[in-house]
Amino acid sequence: MPRPLADRRWVGWATFAARQILGIVLVVAGALKLPWPEASVQAVRAYQLLPFDLTRPIGYALPVLEVIVGLLLMLGLFTRLAAWIGAAVMVAFIVGISWVWAHGISIDCGCFGGGGASENGIAQYPWEIARDVGLLACGVWGGLFPRSPLALDTWLFGAAESIDTDVTEDEDPEES
Amino acid sequence: MSQSRREALRRQQQAQARAKRTQRIVIVGAIVLAVAVVAVFATIFLSQLNKGGNPVAGSQATPVNATSDSTGIIVNPGTYADGAPKVEIFLDYQCPVCKQFESMHGATLDEMASAGQIQLIYRTMTFLDNNLRNDSSLKAGIGAACADNAGQYSAYHNAVFAGQPSTEGTGYTTQQLRVDFPATAGITGDALSGFQNCYDTKATQSFVEGTNEKASEAGVNSTPTIQVNGTKLDNNTVFSASTDAFKQLLLTTKGNG
Image 1 (cartoon, chains in turn yellow, cyan):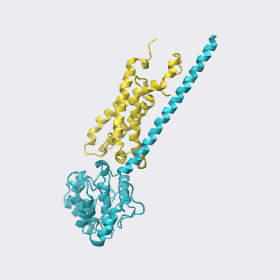
Image 2: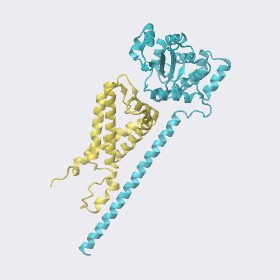
Image 3: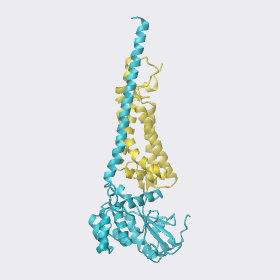
């Protein structure tokens, strides 16, 4: 019988690469914004997409969320959940940039700090969306195949499997 | 040991291992959540420090010529004719393009305001403090609002733009905002000590933070933005307009209700 895809060595290493790429980008993006939450609020407002009252909580929470999810991915802790959250965040960014593009609003995406109105913002949108689609792919991959080498998940939670290999109903070493 | 006993023992061990694993997941998950909550509160706390603290309680005042909804300050209270267009200028004292606008059309605005042809309102924003990582926009805004109480809002406003540093982000010094600009604006004697007391106690900080917030809420996120009877003007048009064309623009722009 062929081994399932998720058990193949290269799949594990692909997940390792995916979670490092998405994780590092999220940590850097979050850390750059973290010390300046009011600037982050402003960047959120520049999209003119969310109700005004939501912009402050989201502006404050988003950098923290990015850093934490990014760290989880880098460490391989709660990989599946973190990868899906990372993917969801990327979907939100893609929707946001598409929205401003569709409405002809020219802004700095505020992805890595900064933000607000910008003269040549629109010219950046295609590549920003392409980048976020790539990161979204990393997130989806990590969500589908969360098992990977050098992950805290295996070290912390993987022990249940090592007692008995025929525990088939519990095939995933990650959190459920 | 019989087959079934061995089987039962093994199942028991498995169940225990699974329970332990679940316990570890819950503990580690709780730690991650706790770190997240602490991080959010730390961010809020640190941003308060970056802002230079909250306004001094009990000292907060609204400038005398503030609009009734505290969105800005009326430059020419009482002098504008009934039905004169309401011209709102959204500005940030650290914004170089605002200075350009000021040197291009500022005199025209002042002239039309004192002639009563328009109702002129300045809506001060402070968002460049976030971009430039300083607090000069807020401080200049506080100074200008204090100058309103000293009866020299427009003159102080003009002095700030005239004194804007050539490099964006250099910011204004306390000496400029507290001494030089009021001197240029002609604030002297008792008015000056009143002004400086207002400035030193940041008496208009809450008001200025409010004008920034209300401008954001109105969907303005860049400066200068010029709005006539609620309709935003296109900045390309504004900056290419001659003095006469600009006047016409202000007098003929239809409001949005």
